[in-house]
Length: 126
Image (spheres, rainbow, N blue to C red):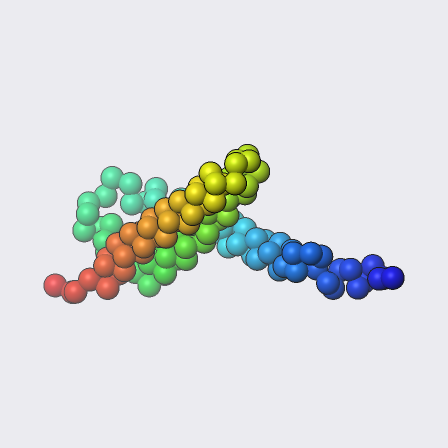
């Protein structure tokens, strides 16, 4: 016989439920903090010249925040789409194909965004 504490510490059959829940909450807090900041940066940059946008994104307190926001948002997007796929696609072949496509799309989008941001942040000074 197992006690309730033993069942909780065992984490159930998946062996990762509590950790996944905690990581989801940390990601949510990061997004809750960064989203208003990113909206403010976007409003500030709207309609500005290319030079002002590049100069602003190159700043120490904006470039890394954008990078963290992009990475956390992409992880959030991938996990959200994976849950939708797992819940609503019942054919095993389609489910695996769509989950793989979700991973590929997230990695491609993330690589393109991160590359563009790094090019802006580490551009040669003229």
